[in-house]
Length: 248
Ligand code: CA
Image (cartoon, rainbow, N blue to C red; front, side, top):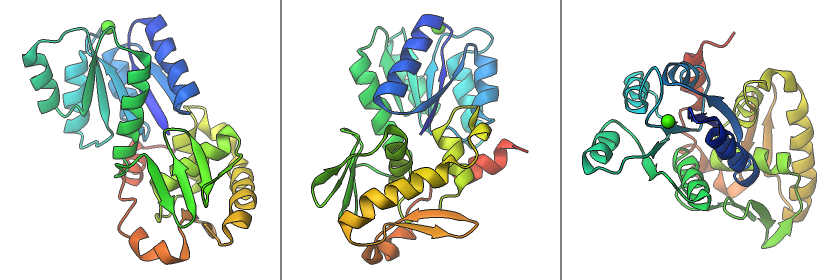
């Protein structure tokens, strides 16, 4: 998952980025003012925006209104130093999904970010079940038939993304864009390595194919019995966002 943090207080921004990288296993990009934030938010398929309200050059509220005005659906968590009722109402009416009042507890920030990342992919439960496989997005652990499977951090991130888009066809480019920060194009063929590692570790224990490859197109996480459910899921905005992003 990939998050954009728009925050002008440099230390706080770095703090939030570090926490999200470590505890939510996200790729994080930073922007330090509102105009830059809006530009970046519209340039890549982010899974979540963490947006400070008081920003130079453009307020968080204006950024949010313009972002939603572009038809963009990524969840937005607002960081605000104010707690007046009117501001909260204005934020929610402008399309914010949640807000935190400064100073906030970092544990609460992580929990709220994780919840928004799940809900942004149409998933409300913290544990995602695909056949015998369970992906626990709170503990960040995969279990097959209740047994924890030892995964590397990157294997887990690939699996979590596929689980949140379960049943949907996910291209290698989509995985790269959502698992890495703005340097994603440098990572080329690593996805195949993670996929084969995941297959080796999960499918032997599960006794069935879970990660399906569609040659030249991408991957889909599903079990044989879950394929019908799968087609209605994964209606996330990633595809639309990516095509609108104007990447070469
Ligand atoms: Ca600020």
